Image (cartoon, rainbow, N blue to C red; front, side, top):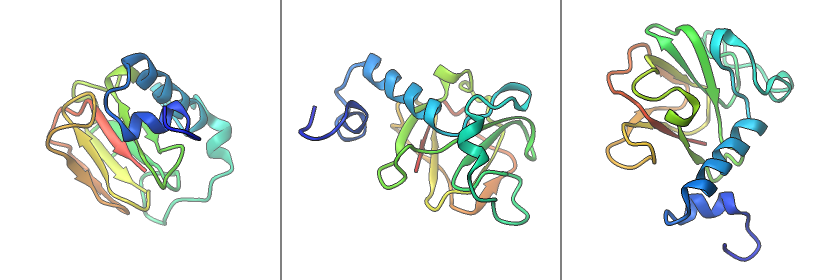
Length: 149
């Protein structure tokens, strides 16, 4: 671990950390951050309750979050994610949260920076970007991870 930092920063800075540490950081990020799962039930609803409203006309109701849906055109079950520290960002393994193998069919980014989907589970390889303030009503890749800010 780097002096004065926690293990989650180490995951972002150094890729040679254990899978257990990476998973623990992802779980921590989802515990503290806004996460909405099956049938729209919020797993960390208190985090989102105090956030500012999203931009008018956005299908994603959460400011600063990337919203994914399991159907095209922003329909179906939602899944919302953002980094614990937006200045640093984090890689989220969608597969570990039952959102891998291409479950994300559409997405809208209410964050201030581009979010990138990847077919790998560790945010490596060719990114599929979703720019800040924009969306993709039909995601053409089988995403297994996403780097968010």
